[in-house]
Length: 93
Image (cartoon, rainbow, N blue to C red; front, side):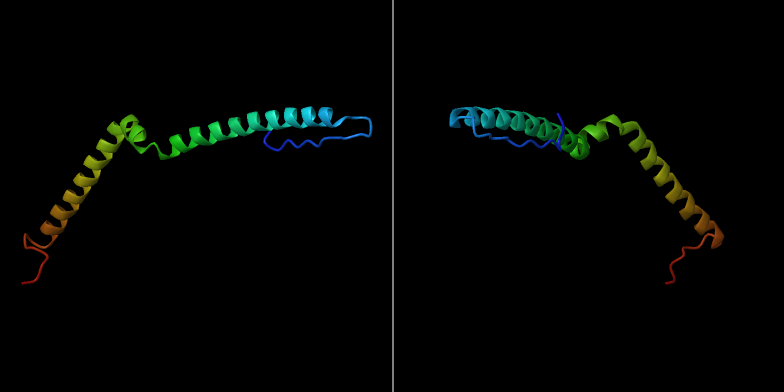
């Protein structure tokens, strides 16, 4: 099944309206099945893209380590700046 499939009903002069109707019904059923497959795939991708809670749970250790590293870096920079100012606060009172 392909998302770009296209089909046309070839109606010849020797087909009856009933045969044409059945042929159209068959093609509609095929298109519905293809559309259902595409909608299911889009839904799966949407859940994968917007599943932030699931993503956070799967990567909680990495997130935690990154937050600890960022906090440590900010603290280190603050201490370094404090020491560079000779132990004085960088704010001018």
